[in-house]
Image (cartoon, rainbow, N blue to C red):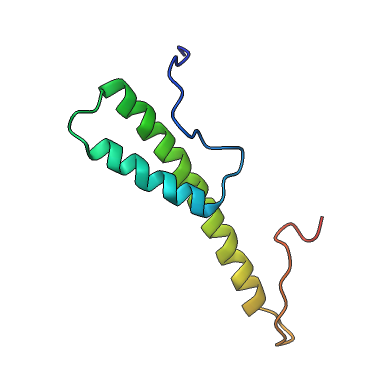
Amino acid sequence: MTPRNKEPKDAPEERASLAEDLRRLEEIVRQLEREDGDLDQSLVLFEEGVGRLRSARGRLGEAEARVKKVLEDAEGTLRAEDLDGGT
């Protein structure tokens, strides 16, 4: 692989919030929709967008699993547990 000499603006942090991922995705889409964009920069933005989309989907999947866990409580009481079982 060849190293990239251009780092995307606002590269995803180790774990950005869902709101940050969505905000940045909107910004990336606006930039990619411009017709005057450079191909190399567009590819960098596209790669960043895919990473942010995966991060957002992961967060939504985690939230869905937590909601299901609360709703599936066998005793009928509402309670929430961490997905990792508290470890």
